[in-house]
Amino acid sequence: MGIWPSPTAPIDELALTFVDVETTGLDSTTGDRVCEIALLRVCGDQEIGRFESLVHPQRPMTPGSIAVNGITDALLVDAPPFAAVLPQVQALLQDAVLVAHNARFDVGFLRYEWQIAGQTLPSLAVVDTLALAQAHYRFRHNSLGAIASELGIIPTSLHRAMADVLITWQVWQRFVAHMREAGPVTLAHVMYPHSRRSVAELTAIITVLQEAIPTGKPLQLRYQPGKAPETVRVVQPLEVYYERGHGYIRAFCHLRQEERNFRFDRIAELRPLNED
Image 1 (cartoon, rainbow, N blue to C red):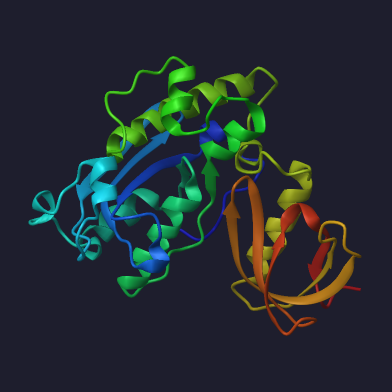
Image 2 (cartoon, one colour):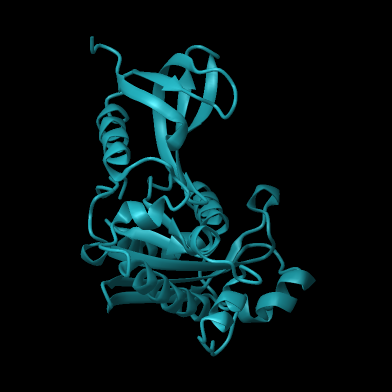
């Protein structure tokens, strides 16, 4: 994990791991934890492996979460802590693109659980079916259940981790089939559905970042933040991450003397500092 595939890679050639977590609440920053996790690894239309487990959250379930997922404290008495299932989770995420519906939620909880386990969640290429729905469709509601219903997918259940993973996979297959009607589907098409950058431009940005981050090499960046004037900055890239259809760089900005986040499609130029 940690090295993103090329944006030009055909989606059918990549390992994809569909992920869903059930939690004690909605906000990991206030101490909510994962109480169930499910992963399904596929390549094309073929399942490669799967894993699901209840997880002891080391805190009580809340009435609100029980009402949603039906997971009670009694069900979790003998469940393992997240650290105990981390090896199985890591194995299914290894060298894969993570796919989830409203991926920011799931990735945020995974990052928190990795942190509690004394580790750092590796940088993952992430595809969000919610972002795809918002970019290409006009569903009456963009919840997973509502989208599945409009697409004629009948769920066996909702708000349990593996059930939601399997529904997300079926929604994904419908989305990709529709996208193929316009031509071949690459990682960039599904990972950055809101981006105004071409696949070639995205590839160039990610290539520069993947070379710079491990070495700590500074980069020169020309940035156009919305309607504000363009600025030229020297940045120390720290992390590439994905959120809601856009790629971002987290970097130390020497101009502002603090960490800042830069969105890919607002970067006019990115190059190593020592280039002429």
